[in-house]
Amino acid sequence: MATAQANPSYYQRSRVTQQIEQTEHTFKLYMYQYFQPGNNNQRVLLVSGAPNAFGNITALDWTIHDAQSPTSKIVARAQGMALGSELSAIRYFICTNINFTDERFKGSSLKILGSFIDSDDDEWAIVGGSGEFSYAQGAVKYKVLQSSNGTIVRELNIRVLCQNMPPPSAHKDVPAVGGDGGDEFDVKEAPQRLESVTIKSGETIDSIAFTYTDNAGKKQTSGPWGGKGGDEKTITFAPAETLIRVDGTTNYFQGKVAVTSLTFVTNLTTYETLGKGKDTGVEFTLPSTEGGNVAAFFGRGGSFLHALGVYTA
Image (cartoon, rainbow, N blue to C red; front, side):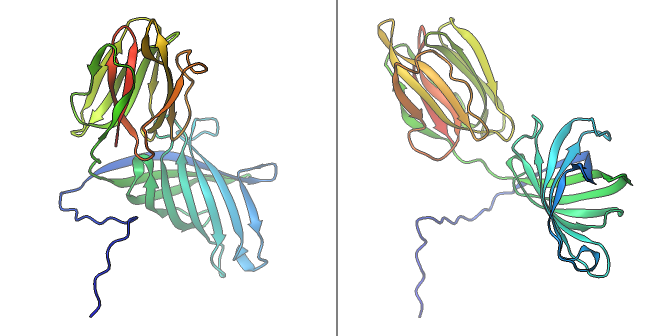
């Protein structure tokens, strides 16, 4: 009789019994396909020589706009491939990502599969997504509005459902980095996601304040913690943007240990360093171990920011 195998260290299994809610997203957008020499956003990679372009492979980078005008704002791009998939007629199989580029959905994408004929109206399947559209399922119904002069314009009507997965529990990465001056500060509710951070800085980091979403989905504000001096800088994170690391330095300032510089690193970008102590202080990185995203802060504040720690989720 075969014995049950133990789960390997890289695998975990859990039973999900709670009700999982879904969020519906709908869009009305306009996709522009250009294939005229000198003005195109696609390229043929393989010409098979078979009838009706069967077996041809074309790379796509079609632009998606918020209005029916080539000069309107580009909010996404359809990036992927089309494959000639029928011998008896011109038909293409399409596998592409709709990668959003505007501020609201930057970093999120929808995964599209389907087929099309240049002049027909049809529907594509949404088989997945990333960022704000994780666990996505839905459809893209499109109709051709223009097909002439090397340009095809399609109206896209997108309807997609995304599962709202239960948030992970935040972990307090202790101890905080810095000194023991000032008073302790901490969040009042368990954090789920960091929404924004406001820093006042000059020669050192004067204060920190931040907003976060708690496990109940409510937005909370914490701070400011520290002094009143310095120039103010607010970083607001995009919906699909997460803070993955905080680099900083500590040093003596006015006779006490303080946090003298901070650099915020997300999955999308690295923001400018705040505070002037980067080149002279003792360097640190938060969280202390890799894995998880920064969801909130704790630490010590007085006349300036004395110590800083993070919650990860």
